[in-house]
Amino acid sequence: MLRALDGRELAANWFDARIDARRGVVVLNAATGFPQTFYFKLADYLAERGYDTLVYDYRGMGQSAPRRLAGEAARMSDWGLLDMPAALDAAAQRAQGLPVVTLGHSIGGQFLGLLRNHALARAHVQIATSVGYWRWEAAPFKYLAWWFWRVHGPLLIALKGYVPTGGGWAGLPLPRGVFAEWRRWCLRPEHFGPDLVTYLSANVFAEIRAPVLTVAFTDDPIATRRTVEGINRFFPNVARESRWYSPADAGVKRIGHEGFFSSKHRETLWRPVVDWIDARLGVAA
Image (cartoon, rainbow, N blue to C red; front, side, top):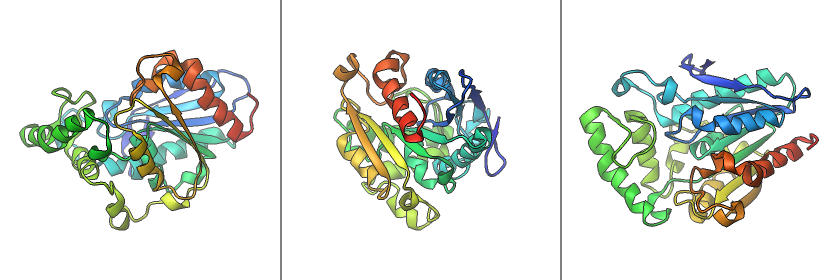
């Protein structure tokens, strides 16, 4: 169990490092609609490489969701303002002086800029992280996204009070406030930009100067070259390294938005990322 900054209890699991000399601690911040279990295999690999690893479900998602989702009051930004900072605090406490790293998938990488305690981490990895503006995504996916934002999602919110799994949405059910905020960001090219001077004005995007590794994929219809560039502009001062992989680079037919987390990529994709973490932290490979 993980306690968010406002006291909310979140379902969480630790994967203990499986070598005698622990190298550090990694926090895995999930993408929208993905349960913590989706990341267990990567967490186990990180543990194998010497990193205690924390995986958890944001409020309103997976095992952290209430039985009656229509009554869930969470907004998506609560994940970055209340849940992710608490996970980073827990990782720093667990580390006992060892270095801490964040690894964010999609929104889990975007919200790095909302972590006021970001300095607790020595380095950050962003996997398939981008803005979500639908027009900049790849066809035909972007037309499905338009349908989801304009028709499917609003209709289900009106009928059920949340967006259930199915009917074109393959992720976990989405609470009303999560969908509404996400929808607003994905329907405008500025993404959450205008909100950074209003209710998200305590953001720290420009303060972050730590090393950041961006990992993206040429067949990802969401994190395209343009949408990845869009999120990178929000982080003007990081020491960024960007790596783009094609399916052929990994010896597969598809990677897409979520394929990185398949264990088939232990050697082709996971190892280079953890090697980068080792190098940034100055630990032996």
